[in-house]
Amino acid sequence: MGNDILRSIKYSEAEGLKLDKIALKLGRPKRQVFLQMIDYFYRTKKDPLDINDDLLKNTLLKQHREHIGFIKTQENDLLIPTKREVDRMIEAQRKVINGFNGLLKQNEVIPTLMDKQNRYLYQLEIHYKAIAVQLSDKEQLKRLFLNIFEGYAMARDNVSSIGSRKEKEQLLANTRNQIKLL
Image 1 (cartoon, one colour):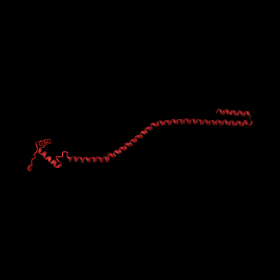
Image 2 (cartoon, rainbow, N blue to C red; image 1 turned 30 degrees about the vertical axis):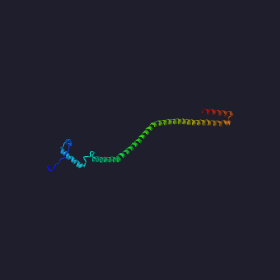
Image 3 (cartoon, rainbow, N blue to C red; image 1 turned 90 degrees about the vertical axis):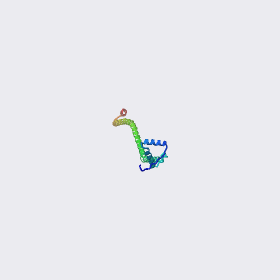
Image 4 (cartoon, one colour; image 1 turned 180 degrees about the vertical axis):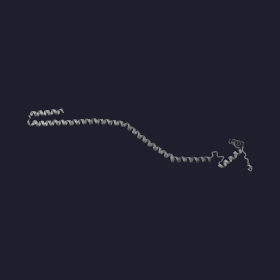
């Protein structure tokens, strides 16, 4: 600093107060704050009149666009396919649940159907037994009728050769009575 030629800048008392406040706030001497402001504007190439700081805004916009691009890429690569698969899985789960609900409904209907089927089979069994009884009765009637018929035939042969008409009529009446008793 010994070799530097010092120059002075004139400013109003209001600007001096502002510089004092900035230096006090930063905790540095006014000269150091002033030199740091010059260095800042020199390195960032910012215009002190540009209050909106377009360079910073442009940098932020560029980073924002990069982040949005990254998010869209992730959305296309990961989120959309994942959502499709989750939707497909949800639909498959709905089908499974509907299938189980259908089974539950069938499980509610099956006992009533089984009960109806059992009653029907019981009725069939009753009818079958009745038919079996009727068939056995019919077979027994046939045997009895054949016995009566054979007895009639033998008696007729014996009566026809030596018997009278009255004996023949009595034999016929007796056979009729036996058949009626069946």
